Image 1: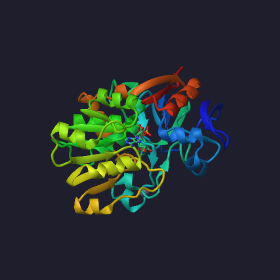
Image 2: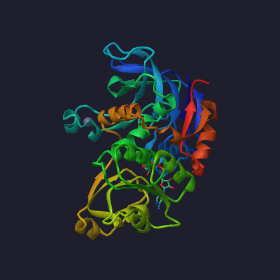
Image 3: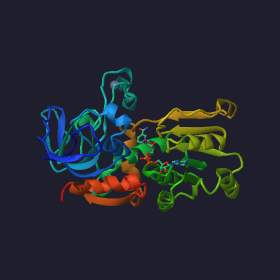
Amino acid sequence: MKALVKARSEPGLWLQDVPEPDIGINDVLIKVLKTGICGTDLHIYNWDAWAQKTIPVPMVVGHEFVGEVVAAGSNVNDFHPGEIVSAEGHVVCGRCRNCLAGRRHLCKDTVGIGVNRTGAFAEYVSVPMTNVWHHTKGVDLEVASIFDPFGNAMHTALSFGLLGEDVLITGAGPIGVMAAGIAKHAGARHVVITDVNDYRLDLAKKLGADVALNVTHGSIQDVQKQLGIREGFDVGLEMSGNASAFNSMIDNMCHGGKIAMLGIPATPISMDWNKIIFNMLTIKGIYGREMYETWYHMSVMLECGLDIKPVITHRFGADEFEKGFEVMNTGMSGKVVLDWTV
Ligand code: NAD
Ligand code: ZN
C-alpha cells in the first residue's frame, strides 16, 4: 500500500510502498479516506529538533483521519466493515492508576499514532478497538478527518463553564479558530481571539468570534473597553504557545479567572507569578482529548448545528502532499486535508 513515510533523517516525507499493517485480535483495520495535516506533522516534515529526538526512522506518520472499517480482530464485536470511523490518536496503557480510574487522557504511558507507532497517512491503518470512534451517520467526511484537532479545541474550550462568560483565545491557528466556534456554540457572551496573522483572524470571524484582534495593531485592553468588559475575561484559552500572548492573557483576566493551556511553548516562558497569586487565577494544562467525553461532545455539537467546516481551507490528493505542507509552512492556511481515495 501507499504511505507517507519519514524514510530518512532529513527534511521531507516520501510516498512509498509499504506492507499493509497487521491486525491483532483487539485491532480494527481501517481503509483511510481523508487525513488532516497537523502542526506535529509539519514539525516531522521540517525535521526540527523536537522531531529529530522523537520520531523513529523509518516511520509512517499522520494521526488525523477518517476511514472505513474493512476488518476486525477476533475479539472485536462492535465494529463492522463499511462503518465510518476515526480514531483517538493517543493509545493508552490501560493499567496505570489514571487509566484504571477511567481517566485515560491522563495515562502516564501514552503512545502517539504517527509519532511513536505506525500512523494514518497511508491507505490502511490498524488501531486498537478501544481507540476507534463511530461517526454519526451522514457526517461530513472532511470534518470527520479533523476530529483529532477539533477534539483538542473541544477539550480545552469545555474545561471551564462558558455560559454567559467572556472568553479570550490567544492564537488563531486551526485549533484556536475551532475553539472560537465552540465557545460561541456553548453560550459564551463575548469571544475575543488574538493572532498576528490576518488570514487566520478572518477564519476565526467566520467561525463566530465576536472580535478577532491583530495584536500588532491593537490592544486587548482596548477591546475590553469597547465590549464593556469591566473586570477582565472569565475564561482564557491559550492556543498559541507564544510567551507574549500568554503574558497578555494573564494581564487581561478577571480575579478568579480560569485559563486552559493547550499551546506548546518552544522554550520556557517566564512570567510574574504575583499576578497569578493575587488575581487568584487557575491554570490547567491540556493534552489531547478526554476519552471519550470530548468525542461525544464533538459528534453531538455537529448534530446541533456547530459548523467548523470553514476552518478547512485547502484540499489536495495524497500524491500532492508536498503542496499541503508548503501552504502550511506559509501560515496562510487553516486545516489542510489530503484525500487518499484519488
Ligand atoms: P498553530 O501554530 O497553527 O497556531 C498558533 C497561532 O498562534 C498561529 O496562528 C500564530 O500566528 C499565533 N501567534 C503567534 N504569536 C502570537 C501572539 N503574540 N499572539 C497571538 N497569537 C500568536 O497551531 P495549532 O495547530 O492551531 O495549535 C495550537 C497550539 O496548540 C500550538 O502551540 C500547538 O503546538 C499546540 N497543540 C497542543 C496540543 C496538546 O495536546 N496540548 C495538541 C495540538 C496542538
Ligand atoms: Zn495508562
